[in-house]
Length: 316
Image (cartoon, rainbow, N blue to C red; front, side, top):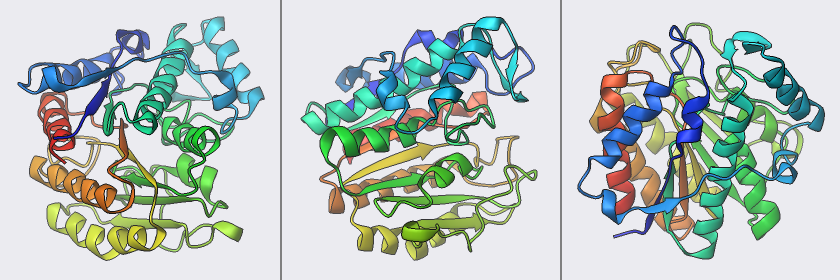
């Protein structure tokens, strides 16, 4: 049985997107409720959310963008750059907590306090780029975690697995020239034309060529397609790359009941994916795995999906 960390903080509920926005506080409450009610909850090791030190933010995001985001928040504006990116005066602090909590989970894994972790965060992060917000995302938590692991702990090879139904264009762009971070994404394409990236020929550029791998899946497909792509694409890639730590952009929006996609992945399908990722972590990274919530908008399914996800982390 693994020592599994769990990161959650009510401060992230203060990010108010309005009653008509899919990225709502109810998502996080559903995730927390599902995990809190499980019989394994007492086994989880709490991971504190802390406001991230700006020096770690600036390993990924342009300082001008960081201060612009803070200024817009304090001004009382209700969105940043696009109506998708709804915000309120508490959004900047909530995002700092989310990024800081993920970094804290990484620290605890590296110190051996925990073996792996699930970070229930909002707002999500994988669409955010170096100097832009996009798709409900403001800071790219997983990208910041990867840079933290490299700069604070000397990790030479970080593997990122992104199974959110939308391609993590921000994460891909941040690392597309970097051979020390392998970014793998499996996602619906096309998916409501958003974000429009993540095609198979996108493999990185320059020194990073070959360290980006996309598995686009056509609408309507489900568990079998995801298993096929994992076995054909992800597993051989990580067996070659041998990541020393694995980060997971954990989006549940490919679920068959989620209105944000046209996919048919079942709860069992999501469970299979995290089990397979755990196997890769055991093989290559001494079990070191940090999973970070991204999308997932079917409130009535989130409790079940999160509970099973964490249960597997404990057992892997």
